[in-house]
Image 1 (cartoon, rainbow, N blue to C red):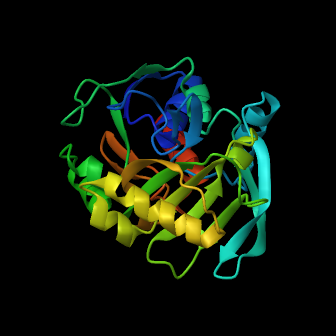
Image 2: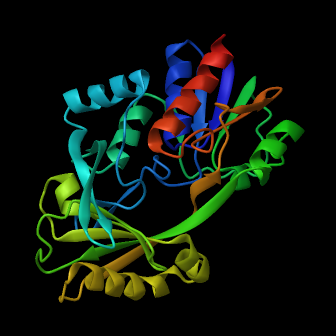
Length: 297
């Protein structure tokens, strides 16, 4: 079986890995310069900061086994079970959030190892030269490839929200034991994470994620949202220093209309990702694996 997986995010890579393990011939095509998708880390001043997913949560046995494998090789580490909630700043307990000392994209790079991944390879239609094609991407991006009807219906039913991530690098750490925070009732901020804490290097770096409303207003010029987010973080945490600010735009950051199905299929074309279930990294990984298992029979 020859399979083309379009998209080298966590869903596409987990699908390709499982297909390869099952004996299929797989190639992954990715329009970006690096694998990972929203499992993203970007280098600023010689240090990677996580700019996409904030952490991993693992409560599925198969994904837990994957995370345990990463932990055993020093690629992932348990970060925290407690995050603050604003207004108020009280801590709330939850599941273990996993982080990566080398940045979360290092986990995607691990999944990509040994696969035929072709980076910087944009496509405009569904590839014809394969027995099966897996579109591992948000629905709005899949629609651009003119997929068959059932895939177009599933993709069109997805609703996505944008986010602008701001990496804030300070002269020193002024905020004490933060780890991370959910920010409610703010028109500007959705989350703030202590990147130095989750990465384990203690760097004075915070990463803020905007609300969808703020991102929507600044999608065409995301840099203009940087000072707004920096000021909001400073007010929230009582930080007086001015940070160095870098921003990254995520047009399709988070699905808000999801389905309980693990994937969509129409003939030889499949669609998978984190819109197929609760929107998180584990869901994307499981969706890709489900497609691979269905293809392998």
